[in-house]
Image 1 (tube, rainbow, N blue to C red):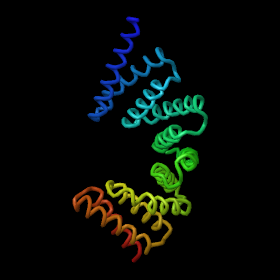
Image 2 (image 1 turned 180 degrees about the horizontal axis):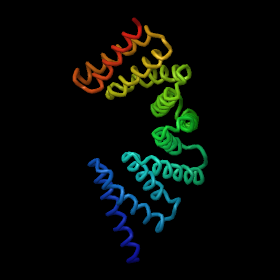
Image 3 (image 1 turned 120 degrees about the horizontal axis):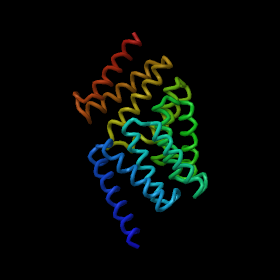
Length: 235
């Protein structure tokens, strides 16, 4: 009984320290606590316990923030394997972790693999949440981004449009994401030499940035530069 209490106290301390440092953006300081918490849970509770899986996901997130995408990838793979074994191949939680895994592989420039992972996540989300759910649309946008990185502009175009038309109206409180959707759409048109459409979307993105972020915001200045280049390309 005493050992159980000590384990509980230790885990509570490790969790609180990891969470405190994450909240402060001190991910390097948070990671040792998260690692120790995971090791303790694996030993005390077992690999497939829900609390162990949550701890594993937390450590993966911390590793991602530190740019350690290989460790994040390994952890997310482990999480997905456990979840699939416990609850079957389709759940919202699995879709979320497939998304996270895709972010890790994208940052390692494994674009073909990321594309496959986003397709898997999207299939689950469309079935369980519906095509118009915000999380489904976020995944749609992420998939479009990977396709753009692979220069598959014709494939990315309808996904960008869908994300903008369905997700855009939900993003009034997130102007940076909303503006980025317009800029991405503009870039896709620009790469396909559809310059009139491209300029229109750049201008809309720039207007959002100016109105909601201000003239001096880095994103506003970046979009202004891209818009200027689009105008020059059409001359």
